[in-house]
Amino acid sequence: MGGCFSKPKPVEVKVEVVLPEKEREKEEMSPNGKASPLAYKANGTARHYHHEERPIVLNPYTNPKDMVEASVCHVKDLENGQMREVDLGCGKALLIKQNGEYYAMGHKCPHYGAPLVKGVLSRGRVRCPWHGACFNIATGDIEDFPGLDGLPKFQVKIEKERVYIRASKQALQSQRRTKVMAKCIALSNYSTAITNILIIGAGPAGLVCAETLRQEGFSDRIVMCTSEKYLPYDRSKLSKSMDSQAEQIFLRSKEFFHTYDIEVLTETQVVNVDTKNKTVVFKDGFRMEYNKLLIATGNTPKTLTCKGKELDNVFTIRTPEDANRVVKLATGRNAVIVGASFLGMEVAAYLCEKAHSVSVVELENIPFKKFLGDKVGLAIMKMFESNKVKFYMQTEVSELREQEGKLKEVVLKSGKVLRADVCVIGIGASPTTGFLKQSGVTFDSKGYILVNKMMQTNVPGVFAAGDVVTFPLAFRNNKKVNVPHWQMAHMQGRIAALNMLAQGTEINTIPYLWTAMFGKSLRYAGNGEGFDDVIIQGDIEELKFVAFYTRNDEVIAVASMNYDPIVSKVAEVMASGKSIRKRDVEMFVRHCKTGDISWLTGKGS
Image 1 (cartoon, one colour):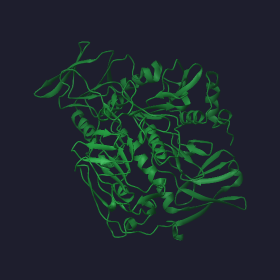
Image 2 (cartoon, helix red, strand yellow):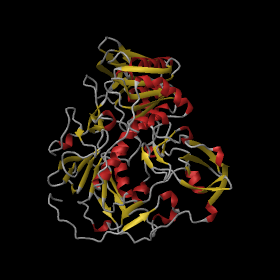
Image 3 (cartoon, rainbow, N blue to C red):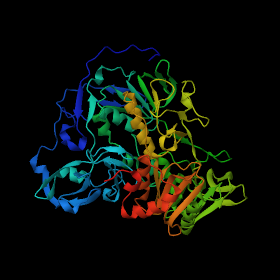
Image 4 (tube, one colour):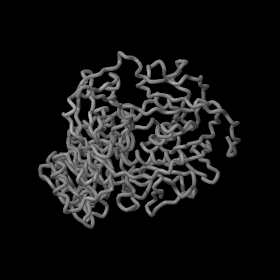
């Protein structure tokens, strides 16, 4: 193929509304029994097969045998602003009363299964106590992330002062609901070299962008491309659950992409973007024209610059194979982690029970010092030390020594020599933007793509999302920040999609992250960059605490361990546009124990 393409002839695009795969009988995935309209290739192309027209699938819950109705409580059992987990006999539901109205929906967060009854009810939505995802109580739709699916919504009726819930048995068991999506059924009329939407990168930002387009009724061609060999997967698990196989952490099944006509081109690297002619060039020379472009390529791990950095058993954790091999090499042997970053510390925690020894090398004197402060960082460090992790602080690696072609020692600038059979590098990452050098897209001083609140770059029709961008954070007075969080990538992908459709939607979310180490979870919300004080409530020595990070008397971030759901409550206050002052902190913690934050949000129940 050359660099000049002719546009395809105009075609009639028919829109089919397709219900989620779990809400249809298996044989309905395709009327002719075929699994997919597309066959994927690794060279950046895809063969297309003709679709047969399919009828619109109606309400999947038409079978009366699938329905159950139960009396769950008396009308006086639930006060305004309260939630209750109720049992319908074949499954549970979350019953909510707000502003005098009753609502019922799934009781578990579809992300990791958190009990939503322990979450935060405010402003017509429930926020997950673990990771901050938000669900609309009237529709069950997911409104903030992480996660991809919403919750099933159930019918509520009042009869003789009793509250009844009518629900599908299937929905009660699944506890998740994928929104109805449109799809294009005229793919065979398109040239493989032309797409309406091109998404470079197949992480959460790219995937949520594609799904949101389909949910909003977009019926044209969508192509995602990734340099990896897998469909989108949960990369955050690579350092938390290092034995995971790729198929175990896929975000969506292959059938999902086939069903909703989202083409994924794997092992396909973009090397150049011509924004003037709206064309991208792949490494193999293949060219593709686009109408709208999303750049969601994420970050590339930084590597060491010292001698021995290229040895086989020196890793940055980037793929499932990397994580699996590290575990294999570390089992019963000596592991050295360079960098007390979240990734580095998660890897150290995971390897503790498997390796003979685990050592962490860090330039700072305390882990997470700039992010969590001295006291919290020191408490976490002590937890690691109690699990036999050795720290070598305020030093760097000067050399990686080999023996018979394999790593045997890590030499530090302090003079210390560490035995090492495997070494993991966790010293940060840089934005993956090298292919954009001639694109005209604007970057900040660190190389991140500058976008506005609608995830638009300076080039019309080009959007960017995820770890690769710097954007204005609303609750920090539009301070331009880079937030490489799993949750934020989801939201930015959604905002990009809505604005590709010219909906004029601005991002307004609170950053939320979490980590798990030795069976203990640390949760964090907000953006603490530039904090000048830390107020700690609880017992930090026992790792049961909440830390409020303040700047100029205002709380800008919060972190906690064993103090759920206080981080979600702080996030909800921030999302409501209210501020928490230093003087409010003690009272806020006291009110959180009673479950009432309406005094601060100004939104009564």
